[in-house]
Image (cartoon, rainbow, N blue to C red; front, side):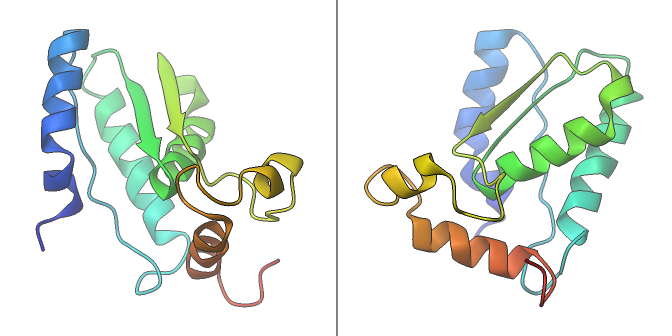
Length: 127
């Protein structure tokens, strides 16, 4: 199986062409093999590196990657980030919002997938 960054290669190239910006795909460590905060640390290190390149920086991610974008954007508010794009983000570990229940199935990752993602991402015993 190729690295995840390769699976998004075409999309990254299209985004780079459409925006006339550089696009960097970050291959972060995955749970459950690497527990929190490994993936968040990887995302933050990528933003730290990007902020030193003296280029405009925007962040985007989907699902768990969107969670990492939100974490990195909050951690680096002073870095002058231009934007963040969160595509079906994992941002509510309680999984109990009205929209979570309303869109539990048929709209991208199902509720069961999000719950599993949170259980793999957060340390055991975290609520």
